[in-house]
Length: 128
Image (tube, rainbow, N blue to C red; front, side, top):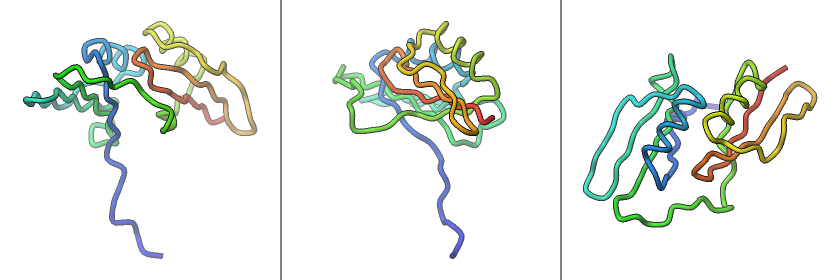
């Protein structure tokens, strides 16, 4: 088997309110904007976690024409790994997330499902 010629670089989330989305991902998880693009049709902010500036990155996109970007059912959650799921879920809730599946434990992992204020699903896991 040959080595892959690609690596995961980023994932994009379309958001209806850029300021609110930026606040949420900064407060809930510590993401920070590392680069921005203000184009004619959209604004895009590239965000990174501390020490992971090279990626993979979270990109938030807001279209200037106000199009509907309500998340649908055709995708899964954004997955985040933490060392302390209780603290991380509490931090996300304080920033505006809602719990869709409370913390539960399976062999080797604790899991919780959240919904970000803009509607995207988030899966938080802690390896045990």
